[in-house]
Length: 250
Ligand code: NAP
Image 1 (cartoon, helix red, strand yellow):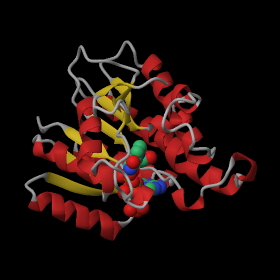
Image 2 (cartoon, protein in one colour):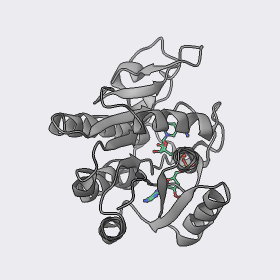
Image 3 (spheres, protein in one colour):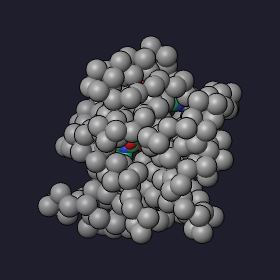
């Protein structure tokens, strides 16, 4: 069995996920490039390999039970364990922003399918393999817009953002993270949520003020925590005007 660490990043064909795969690959890990679309996934694998990474495309649509099961079986057959799971795949439906009073339940369901249910499906399918690793790490890519503390603070710059759909999916993801962290507290697995900050990607029509590489730094930090590192936190970019990283309030 390989001694190299094995990392799976969902939604790794572009944006923060691609940058995360590249940074983990640069650390000498085997990177499994999760992507729902074969052409986009293979193109990402190729780009990462050209950059020197040991990258392998793996078809993974987090909303498709069969795809999730197939991916878990392939990782089990080929590697027998998983050291790092990055639940990065996400959608924001930013071009369909609705006020709470006009929330479309179909859109809400669509966003939750990926951002919440998809994370639980992938995590549960892969936990047996994460338990086979000596000290696995799970990183759920969340957001400060899911923070109840931040979004209800009238002095915070994000206060004017009013929508149920994406923010509440990340609030749910924060609780999902907390609950896995509690269940796994006596294991060697660490579970944390990442706040990448506002990064320019397709998710926000490339309007973010940080780069995907900067967003990925947060994920990589949590994916490579030492054994005495934190567990059950939302950690990452702080909107403190200094570009600092730290614990973000739930
Ligand atoms: P992005 O560039 O739009 O990338 C999203 C990735 O998720 C794409 O690879 C996309 O694949 C994939 N994806 C979507 N639905 C999927 C599904 N059902 N199964 C598998 N993959 C799926 O967005 P991003 O900004 O890098 O977002 C990455 C994560 O960071 C998300 O969880 C997002 O909520 C979070 N985040 C982003 C920001 C930001 O400012 N950008 C801030 C906070 C948190 P396709 O190419 O096939 O669509």
